[in-house]
Image 1 (cartoon, rainbow, N blue to C red):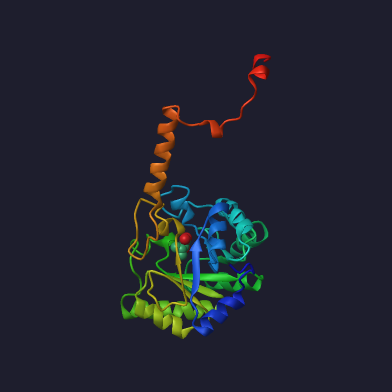
Image 2: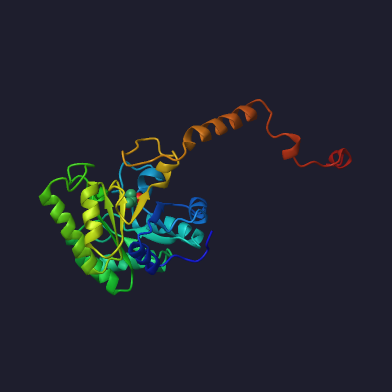
Length: 277
Ligand code: KIV
């Protein structure tokens, strides 16, 4: 697999030539190493880590310190994949200055290549300021989990013409504000295709159909490691949770029966030396 680090120019070239961009989340060093070695273009250290790794009920409680901690581990693993750190709720909404300062932590402390933040047109002043500070920004429109309560729950967005037009306008405004890429979550495929054709920066879909410039999913979902629920847009490529439980169960049984450790897992010394102790 190619070791060269992926750049923003590579994403742009892929869009222009019709090659799809692959993105997957990761939150720790071992998983990010595997994702990187599998040749994924971009790793998103999503604030979904709050739910799939930290056990919160939503992404809302995730803090900047938690994000920086996990982004550091992922950045250390990513020799090839472009690393995007997800700005957590209330780390960019209070003021443009707060948004720039926190975006800076993802780059300076955590070693990320870019940041992502949720929101459309209203977030454009923050996006513009972060970009002007020299930090690449990925937008995120459609279903925005940090503000799902305001959207009346985890629902598909842009289903009628008026809300679809707003999302199209948000995508155009984010591009004008300097975003290099936009994640589109849970929107109808026709709208995603229209937005993808209407802007010159790449779109990455999650529950947005096949006509986006790329796709992203949560790594725990595709590996079958998150058992609480599985959204419709997820494809599970392997179901690891039952396999892990079975392996752990075998270990427990062998410990309880004295089967493990066997001689091959044991360090020995001569009886003579043992007697001198
Ligand atoms: O937090 C996350 O993992 C995300 C993706 C689902 C797009 O924002």
